[in-house]
Image: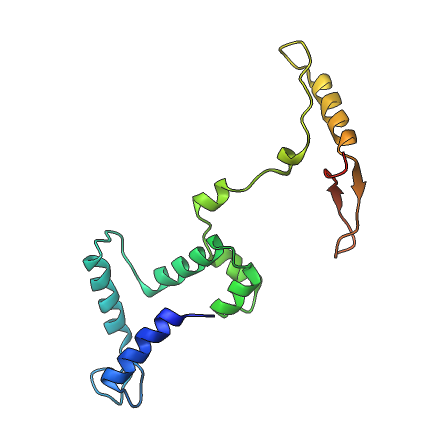
Length: 158
C-alpha cells in the first residue's frame, strides 16, 4: 500500500527521536508503547479534533476499511490489507457508507424505456407485456461468464 505522506512523517520522527528498539517506545526505550497509552493518546486526539463519539483503534480500523471501499478498492485487496484469512470476515468487518449505497444503479435502469399505454393505469398483465417487449427489444442473450453461467443484456445493439 502506498503511503508517501505517512512515510514522510515517520522518517521525520525517526530523524528527531532516533528510537533504537521500538518505533514507538514506552516509558523506557527497551519497552514498547503500552496499549493503554496508545488508546489514551487517540482519545485525547479525538477530543482535540472536536469528535463527540468514542474513538478507539478498532474504530480507526473500521474507518480505514470503509474509506478504502468508498474509494473503489476491491474487497479482496481490502482483505489482504486487513490481514483476514476469510473474505467473509472482511465482508462482516467493513461498513458501507450510505453515500455508496445510494450510488448503486439498478440494472433495470439500463433497459430501454417504452412509451406507456394511453390509459393512465397499468393493469398487471399490461405491465408484464410491456416488460416482455422491453426485454425482447434489448436483444437479450445468454453469455457464459467466468463461472460458466450467466445472462446479460446487450443494449449496444438496438
